Length: 127
Image (tube, rainbow, N blue to C red; front, side):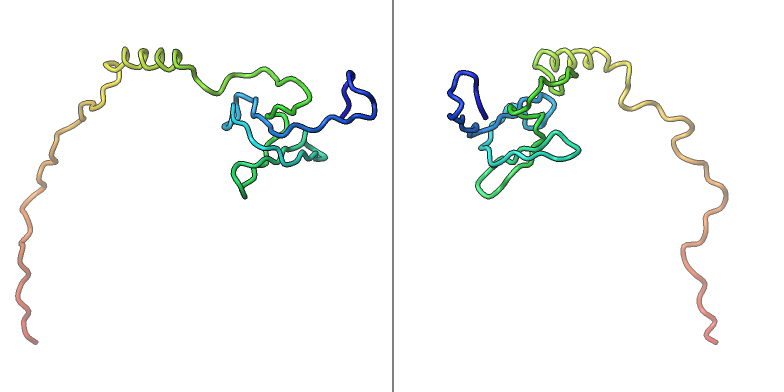
């Protein structure tokens, strides 16, 4: 990796850690020790990072701080505190519209259909 301000024979060392910069990624904002960067034929590549000693993560390169192009615009996956408060206020206003125990239809107990059956069985004939 070369930089314009450095002499041609001086190579910059790769970063020692990688950050997740994609807001839609579940590990957004976290930083990990960089182990390696790999490219694949049909993808933009992956970053292997250390989550904990002995545990590695395989992260998509575009989700990390090592991506080569800016992220595509898209909806943010996480809600801000103000958005959550507004959502809860909206839900609180409409609670009466959705009753939690709607009235039942029809009678509460079915009508009996005839005489009840005997609770005891006839004695065996002994044959």
